[in-house]
Length: 153
Image (cartoon, rainbow, N blue to C red; front, side):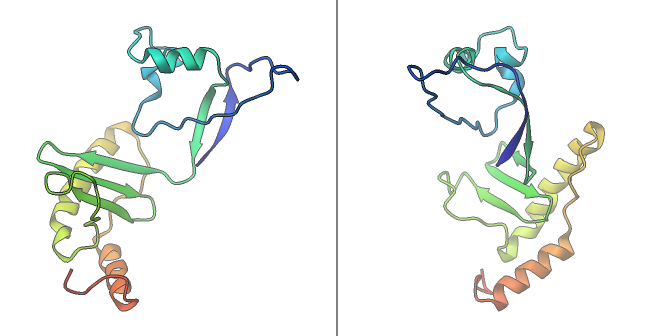
């Protein structure tokens, strides 16, 4: 959930025209794909039409930043600043029903995907904390002790 920093336009509101709030939060869509944020190509006509008639937030701050990567061979992983995340094998689990992030054999693929995220972070100046394998092991052990994760998983 984020908080609006500024608004680009406000619709006219009256008793005859009461507000009808609808919040659209688009996951995995860059802002520059919409005309309201400067894209001249009309690649999202329905969203552009809605934005033309709506309150549009110019900036948006996310309280739980995360980074994600998806590979051509079917892996998808997200990492948060706190070091937790999600890992899915989309080739075997396309509906993302089984989070493999804390499974015993997942550390090698997590390291590989985290390294790819870190390669992107350096040139972009991204400040998300890098993946910590020791912290991962400690969290996994705690989940096993609490009975939230099977030790053999």
